[in-house]
Each structure stands twice: as C-alpha cells, then as structure tokens.
Length: 391
Image 1 (spheres, helix red, strand yellow):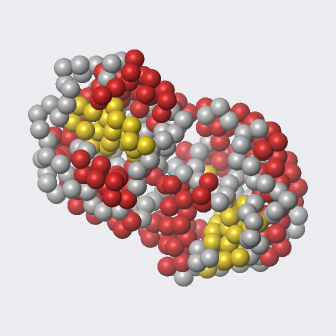
Image 2: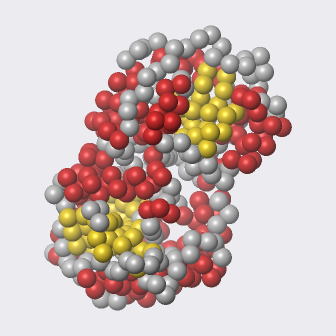
Image 3: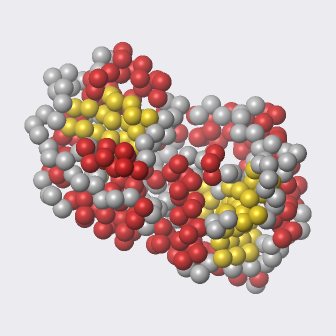
C-alpha cells in the first residue's frame, strides 16, 4: 500500500499542523508504509514528482494557489487542487490511497472525482466545516460546503474524523452509513519536546499558559474576565504564546478591564524559548469556547503537547483520549461564564503537590497519544479501504 498525503504547502499551515503532518508520515513510514506528503503549490523551479525525504512537490506555474478569501482566490485555489488531483489519479493504482487533509470544495472538484480512478480517496475531517468557517467569517468556504458538501462526500472512499462527533456528522452528510469511516483522535510526537520542569507554587501566585494560534473558540476572553474578577490577587497572570485573529481583541479586553500587566502576549515561540515558558507556568489552558462553533468534543493538538510536556491544564469540553476522571485536567463549564480562578488555584495546588506529575503525564502521552500509536489504527483502516475496493 502506498499513501500520498495530499495537502497545501507545509509553510502555509500553522506550525502545529505542519508538525502533525510530518509526524504522521514518518510514523506510517516506520510501520512499513510507503508514505509521502504531496504538496500542491505554485513555486518556480519545482516540477511534478520532485522528491525530498518526506515530500513530493507539485508545481503548476500558470496557476497560483492564492490563500486569500476572495471569490477569485478560491476559484484559483480550487483549480490548483483539481489539477493536482487529476494528475495523482493518473499516477496511482488500486493499492494506493490519497489521504486528503484539504476537503474538496466546489462543483469543479465534483467533475474531477467523476473521472475514472483506481486509487482510493480518504479525507480527514478536523471540524464541521460549515459551522467553523462561518464562525470564522470565511463565508464563501462555508457556502461552498453547504452547497456541494453532500455530493462531494458521496464520491470519496473513506472518512476519518478526529472525534466521534465530527465522524458522525460527516457520515450523515455523506448520506450513507456504509461509507468506510473511523475516528482517530489527534496525536503528538512525544519525543519532539522535552518534559517540563515544574515550578514551585507560592501562595497567591499562579501562571497560566496558552499555546495556540488564538481564535474566538479558544475562549481566552472567559479566562481574562476571570482574572479581572480577582482584583486582590496580583500574582495571577496569563501567558499567551502564539498569534492569531483573536489577539487584538484580547489585548483590548485586558486593557479595558485594567489587567494589561497580567496578560502577557509573547507572540510565536518555539524551541528553547517555548520550553522555558512551559517551565515557568503552573497550568495550561485548552479550548474554553468550542460551544461557540456548536461542538461538545475536541481532540486539539495543544492538549496533547501539554500532556507530553507534563503540564496540567483546563478545558471546557470532552476529549475522547482522556477519561472524565483524568487527574491532570480541570474541566470547566462550556458556557460564557468567566472562569473561576480560585478553582484553578486549588487544582494547581493539588496536582503540583505531586512532584512526579510531569513524568506521569508524559508516560500517559507516550502510551496513548504518540503518533506511533495513532498511525497503527490509521494503517489498519486504510488497508481495509483498499482491500474493500479490491473485493
């Protein structure tokens, strides 16, 4: 079986997403699968089929894959995707799988998928597109999915969702429970980050960390409002590592509430700088606003990094990889209420009283969250899809 991971250029993806794709490919390779990333792009000097250790680059000099959100940009991007798909269909055979992280978007893709092909096309879904795109203001992409999504899903050969909620929605959208489908939660390359050195806790001191490309559904406004409610506790601070569309609004909110000095915006950090910030903070924060896009489950990458590094964290929805009584997660209500900072203080004090908690969290991550574990399940699913097609 050969697996071609079909995606946009890695440099256009968020850092966590590009790391995920490379880790998935390398884990499949370690399991004996012939797997590479196929990037569609407009880039001088690269021809279709040029290979690096993990990637095949695809170049169409006359077609720019414009990442902008205008109608013209979406049409150019759609043409680029379709040209790349057609070339792949011509090259691959019945034991090959195109694993697609870029769901086909429009009516022109429907024509591409109607062409005879012997390979299988499996799509990984990270969200419920129409809800997430609409809540992000990406109305054209949301409309594309509303208009053409059902037809397109009927023409693919397998569905992978990162939560049961997402998988169930995509299967229903396809209109048939017979389409092969599976839930495989996100993973993390545990050995790619060091284990955190937990700081000591002092009375009235709490440093909270969020690592994310911050969007509205991360819900950090809830946490900022909670910090503002603790006016007599100046030792409580939120550290945000990352950019994102929500950052200007959060800066403004912190200023309006008079706590700008307690909300620290570090910008994008990586390597030793990011590890040093992990070592300074007592707890981390996952998504607190998934309800804003109508979801009750998540399998977010940052939560897996938190577990791999060994930092306890808070979140406001279910994650299938962690039981309800997992001792290193504090679950808060999935609503618009300010976060109760005192409950976080009590949680941090309880967890940090065990000096071995970072090692225990890392052990759990290695046994349950590492990509080496997740990709065994994906390999089995893709083999089932190809064997089913052959039968």
